[in-house]
Image (cartoon, rainbow, N blue to C red; front, side, top):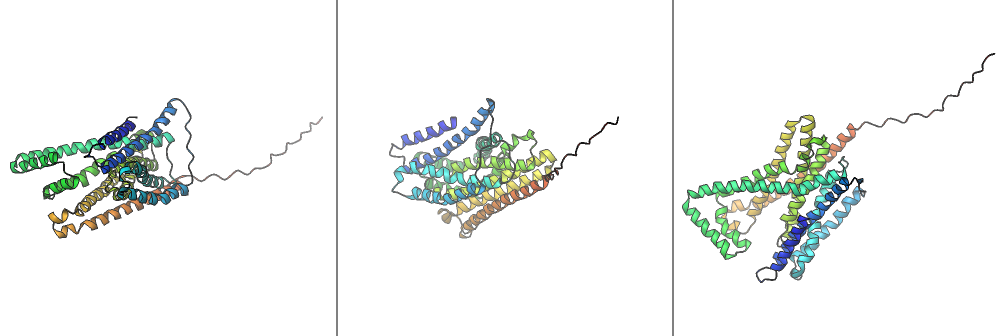
Length: 405
């Protein structure tokens, strides 16, 4: 209820601000997209809340009927391109700019949510799961608990970096004065996002600043997220999960985190179409790495495979770090300002970096599907074959006993 109230309050504030002359239609639409994403999270949280209520009241919880796999995967694949194209048309059309805040949010939640659903369904295909309440509990943990914990830790790390930067600036009074003037220009000049980036470029391209930003994005963030994304698996630590169950639980928790992150990161009208496509790759990365960590955590708890856990964590962090680093590197180098502040040989590496990001996303898809097939095969081999039915024979005829006189 708190999440739903926050979504409504955000939209209400945006509508009130839109009555002023300094709040554009694109800003209203971006706020509506963010409010729609928050509202979807609140609506999804009603399901595990209801299941928990039924459990507390002693009501039986039945598994929901599921349509065939072809239907679950085929229908979203058919409609997803059309939904994205329609959303891209709404986002880029000036004819519907005034009502885009009404038209785009439903398309936003569908085009962001359906890829997460498809990847989650494929990752868990043919593998045993938990009860209905347990599965929704794991998913909602990744949806709400993991983002909050990750955000707090990442902000603490940023605060530490800011403190170190403050100590350095104390030894550089000239640079501190320049930054103070820059902050004043941004605060009182009300520049646009592009103008802010233009002002910051001379400082962002400094080797020390660029290196610190890359370390934070490509190293520190993956180290934090890959521990906390499978939060639903950590909460089941005492349930004697098998590695296969850990894999499915990790995929559920990672899907929840991927959904909430993608809903927020793509809530921008000006670059909506490109962001939605890019975030689909982020979804497969989050689901696979969380499933991998869930599998390794269960193996460590049940089979004492701690080396496997360390290797899985290193692989998850490496994939995530490469994705983050190459995405930021390639994205920055494709900006117009890069050509004015960086050498041409550096700018030319932007497109290859983005191509490498695509390769990493496709590799994560192959690894996710391959892991699922391998676990299915192991599951079939571990399941003992059914005993042949016993032959049914007629009962022996009762012997007649004649008593002798």
